[in-house]
Length: 63
Length: 358
Image (cartoon, chains in turn brown, cyan):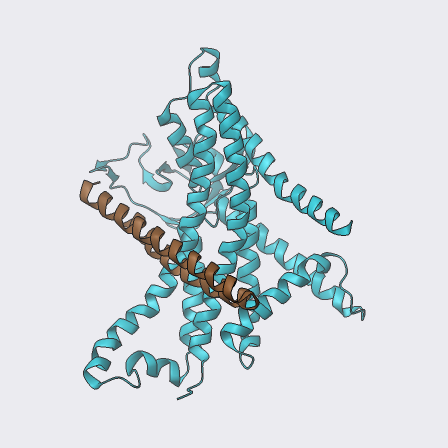
């Protein structure tokens, strides 16, 4: 394993973590504003989070 | 009162596999490093790593712990069918098996053909020996067959319970009906649409329960890790890809090869990207499930190994608590990954059968 690859994977994981955090916080805000739409927001949130997560894992496997 | 009972039962069910898996892995570890404990030595990090790696991999026998388990058949195609028990490789899988005058040896989970002395000729760490076609019933294959049989039994009994004419579900259907309804109403209909969802329900329900039950089985002390195996998730993803591709309508292919509503140069650029996207989608499905389940297993096993690495009372208490917390989280992840896999599969099917609306 080379150090640049590890650093790159780390950066991508930081990005992915930040992205999922942002999705979570936005979803919570959305639910707080409109609690009736909680179910729909939750579903959309999980899909978006899963897609970002995929990138994170792809980065981990590239190392 | 009923709600209280429900939560108590749920808590019990949730904690049961956790306690069992914690206790068992502990036993496994200590039996592994038994002699070291007697000498007052700790388990080294390398030993722990080897143990975890061993757990994550598929194997030719089903061994829960040292001495508990059974061998499984090895099926090779090498000048005819060669079927023999994996016990011929020895209890640690390091011996040379002799079958009908042919010799085989396992190296890193793969079976190679060797001479009578059982030596492998190495080239840059990889054996250059012949690898016969391997159709062995390995641990994972065995668990998949068992799980399929269990699912068929369970769901045919659920289906039968509705044939009796009473509308209220009985038996296993009591527990499973809300989940089946959930898959239909929350996963299939919103993503595929009222018109087409019925065609895909069988696949969605099968994948959902298959992945969920196998994930849960991974939390039990049996030490199986089926959904954390790349080949298994790859198969699930390939099936999803085939269904999406074969059910794609004119609108779907139109959006891939000739994206409507964008300038012509853009259409030419988008076509290869979209085409690549159809392969990347199931690829992401495969990686996501595999990585999530593997990561969960690695975390739990590592925490348990740390108890033996540190070998103090404080470490035992704190890491056991942490393992418990992570295990509860893993139970959530087990259901969540099954949900996400099914949900994304439904999303892809939905995009394949979507009608033009502009």
